[in-house]
Image (cartoon, rainbow, N blue to C red; front, side):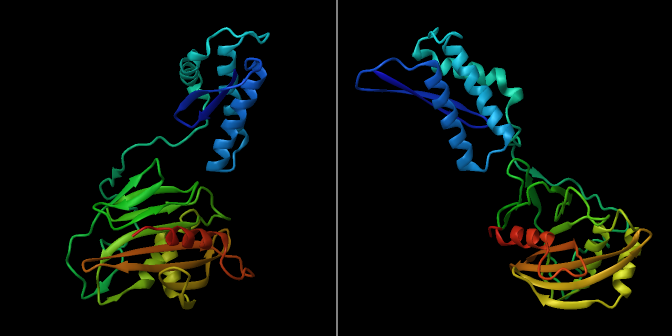
Length: 306
């Protein structure tokens, strides 16, 4: 009888099954078991994503634990193959602190009460306009396990960029921030809902998101004032949604001039509310086309589910 072990490892589960095939040959050995375990574990994580060294180490630790539980150091079996599932479960518990860190899956959390930063949010209207509907705006939920936002009751699901933080600043506004800034300019995105209006004040959204990106260098009001008074190249377009773009916005700070590009994006509307987004991205003077921050922004918007 040739006995083969198949070990399937994931972040939260260890499943072990044994298959017995007809034929003759020596019993499975310690080395064969270790090789089979590692092969199957690594193939699983490679299918999910490119494994990093920590994930490979986690595979080795789990397989070593399982094989040590089934064999003596010299290779002699010390447990019956029927104990395989029990040994794997014991290893899962024992090695849990060493497992590759994964976001804990929890139920989506509703947005906290509004927490506006003075000088950044301008009044209660996120996208001021004329002849606007008076309907109550829906709220966002954030699922930290999936790193995804969605509207309560449906209508939008959007995964956020990996490594970026999400803040439910108020029920109708999500602020998405990069982990690091570029010479003091932090890439920041907004996703929010607004009433349906006859016309919209897009530049006010550009000014607000600019203040978020320059918060490490300038007081919010100072940033918004510079954006409002400056003469910037303005355009429409972009690969996703309807975009009002302010290009080559050069802002003066105590640490020198910083250049950014600002987006105010209309994603779509229902009869009662609209879905909108905004972005501030650092921009090099000689950089042509979309920069890394801009590509991340439009990739996030493009993959949204409605």
